Image 1 (spheres, one colour):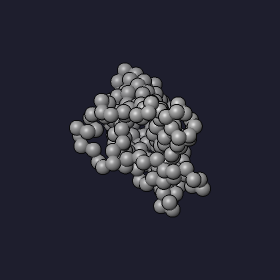
Image 2 (image 1 turned 120 degrees about the horizontal axis):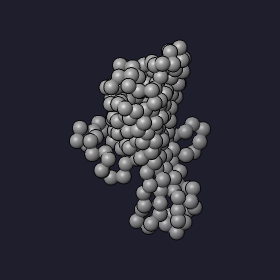
Image 3 (image 1 turned 90 degrees about the vertical axis):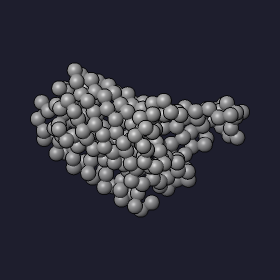
Image 4 (image 1 turned 45 degrees about the vertical axis):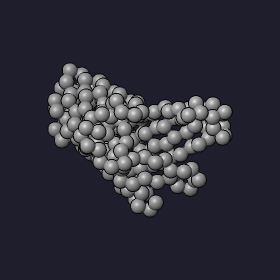
Amino acid sequence: MKNIMKAIHFALVLSCLAFTLAAETSATQTRVDLGAVISKDFVSAPTVDQAASTVGSGTPFGGFGWEVIMGRIGLGGSYAVAFSQNSQSGWWLDWNAPAIYTSFHVLGPRSFIDPFVNVGIGCAGRIYLGPMASFDGRPGEGLALTIFPFVSAGAALVFDGFHIGAKLGYTLGQGAVPVTVIPAYPLGRFQATAFAGFSIGGP
């Protein structure tokens, strides 16, 4: 747990420093990305075929993401969920949220090809939604929650006000929320993500 907290502290400090530097960049070099994301986690590093099949395999997470890029530095986050049903017709909600991250865009916000790296902090979890007859408890119970620092790398294509891309993430550590009895959520170490949406201020 100490190592996880150190990694989270490092990610927070790095994010604050990077975005402070970015604030000094001219506003003419700013891009805002808004879009949809779809992702899936893996216990071990996925093959190219496994990562490419994220959209159609199992029940992937789906949601939305945002990022503000100033110069080569960005600040963003994404939030995705997945619903599942067990054999007794009970519904569960899983979520995976790389909630806040700082990014470095190698070629800047105006490039058609946009390779990048991210570092940040996220949370993932699961909760039971109901009905009561299918779970030995009440809706809202069965909560599991994990916090995790992460790094990721990927690339996007940016053109005519749109962007599309993919990235691969790795969690630096995982742990339950400190000073609680909430069990940890079993999130895979690797996360493959595809994304697409609108870009304001791109090439």
